[in-house]
Length: 315
Length: 320
Image (cartoon, rainbow over all chains, first blue to last red; front, top):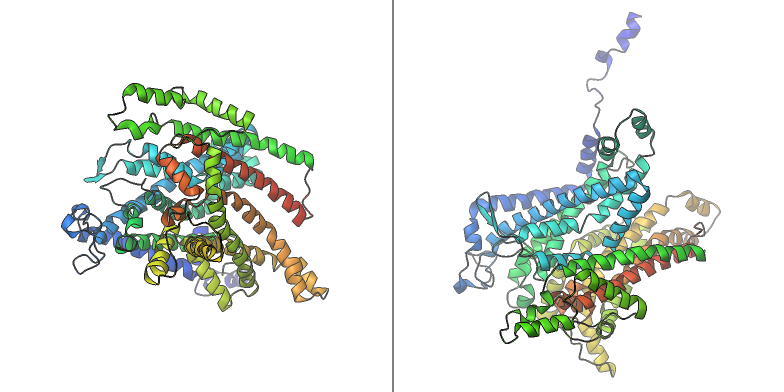
């Protein structure tokens, strides 16, 4: 007996024990092997370094300082990205604008997550009338081109909130409005994903078991079902950041974005159509940064979709 | 089957109502706005302003205005008059429709014609150089914001190379080959911008759909019974892959109608997109409502068309 036990002791096993990975670790290993996703992560890291390190090099005061005698200058040693129509340094503005653009992306996704998850979870879990009403509403909002809603909302709420100060920096009140309206016009897709996940998950045995144990509906929704829908939500949220940054750029392009003095990559493009030929540098750099950010986020999001899909093989 | 479609149409009504209600409510939350053009003009006294408001029906609360708008639309099909130009909304839309269909429609047709073969080749020759190239370009293509591509194309093909004009001139009438060439030339850049974006999105979809079908059992069966590779590819894989693609294409058609807000703005294409932007700027509620409701009806209609197409493309689907 003793000899048999000895052969199965850990000491007899190879030196490296078989490691058990959590689902998140597995996803991370898969993501690391995806060249495009790693490229996206590196790009994102570089962008974040750019907007953080840059803010130590240039002050926000400098970014908002205008000198009309320097207006529309092309790139030079003094102003590497040139100056804008009222003589502000574009390099410094892309740094502070980038912070705000990323903030808009993240904050509006947070809002759309809350709304989308709540609508999708309640519709999917309760079904029946709740489902019909919520989904009909979602469908209606989905059938209005989101740019319509964005424009209408931006136009009427754009200057309703006063400028405010946070961490010693002054922000345009329109920033809050823009975050809110982008968030509130982008939750529909998420709601549909969450709903369909809930529809299939609520039929599982473990949910029946939870019911049998007397667990309350709300607790089942948030503690038993919702954690199992994180994978598609993470993917949708990641890609949502890119869409939100683009949305901000689109409404800014139509002149309805965040108001001065706060710079965003989007509102730096506001005058672009007037300076297409004469001063392409004023729209090229912010435009390029938006492109790089969107591309990087899309790479990461695409990689996450594969990495979080349990059907793809892991080795 | 007829019953199914009638039921679907009836179900679409609440959605249409909800859409029109949401837009109307949001638009109406802007008090006094269509009058902003007179707001700073001291030559327009208060009574005149009140009279104009009354003549536009703006003195009534918005739920009543919405009711009236809906009632007129349902009973007579009339979309009302524009606040700013006083022209019937239908006429304004019809004025812009040809340009929109020409530019945005052409871009849509072109991208469908490009995306399907590109997606198919990319999937059949998966991991080949062509596939890598096509998927990379498509990935960049759909990440590129249209304002950026628009501006870059203008800079390269318009300003530097002087190949194409970048300001759309809608006054050119097509009378002979020369004027047609002019119209064609000025459409090239906006069409290119839109085609690039749509081809990229659609091509990825076609490829994914093909790749989903290639490893399936029925494909192996088709090969096993000795069908030619051509027959397997076009008769089996392609036809099955096309089902979701057709949905996407058909559902995208209504978006042609609303135009491309940004692209039309950059190239100053006088389509429905730019009509919308100017209506937004002057708070021209009737025009915005008109465009939105037509768009919503088109969406519902094309959803139905997709259902019919489904039954035709996929005999497994039965409606009851």
